[in-house]
Length: 356
View 1 (cartoon, rainbow, N blue to C red):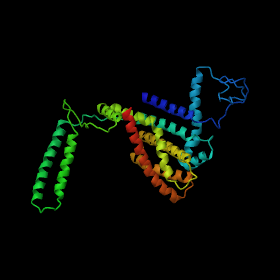
View 2: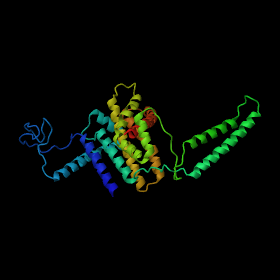
View 3: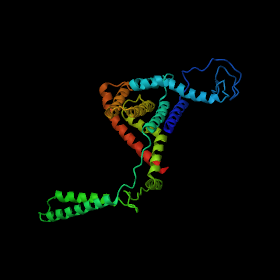
View 4: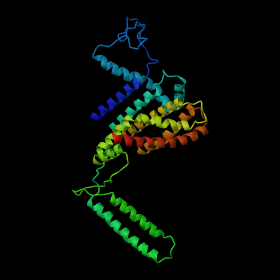
């Protein structure tokens, strides 16, 4: 129950934040009656809004007005969503091109939709998937330690046999068995050196001290070793707060695909990236809900693998007026760039989460 309430709060928050960056263009502004002066700046009013500061003529002064403002912010924002989301899903290229060309009143802006999608995605994951569990750090029992010690002893014996066999051969001849035996022993010894057992006999694998040369990061790693649950919470919180970083990380990669087409500016690529990221997050929401209601895991996996590249292809072709072949190779390149951007984002989250 509490998870549902928190999810509803996240969704409403996302809508209100999206609304905060979404202009009122294209919506009804009132009846146009003149009414004295602006209560905010003192300018004579011409219509329902002050032409100097933008404040509305009518000011709510009741407790119910708080609920009205909440519903107004969410549902007026939602009004544009019913036009924007179908376009984003089925005609993403046309949506991107029309927004860049200046058709703004009909659609939710990319940034507003992105912010709403971020909150909706995290709220959905939290509601249907729950919190991520931290595996117990104390997982290596004395029996497991003894087992790897026996394996090391056996590998040492095999190495001695290989060395004796190699000594009987002609010098200078490579010996694959000797190389393999040394490699196996080295791997087992490395794994054993990174493990320990707690005093109560229920200890688990513990990694050695890490020295990156970056004091703040080293301190964060040390805290993560002591309290992995808190570290995971910080990483989730960082993903929530720094999701916007995906946009500046991704834009240069898209720009690389159009270096010789100078009439496309970074602004165009930013609109493309922001709408694309919003769609991918809404796709995560859809797949998460599908899994929760019992849709086949195979179908969900197929959709997760097939829909993103197909959407990229359609959006690239429509937004940049590309031919099929040109859009196809750019889609393949963009998939690689997306993986690199996601990896860079994960590294950013890891560093920022541990340093907090």
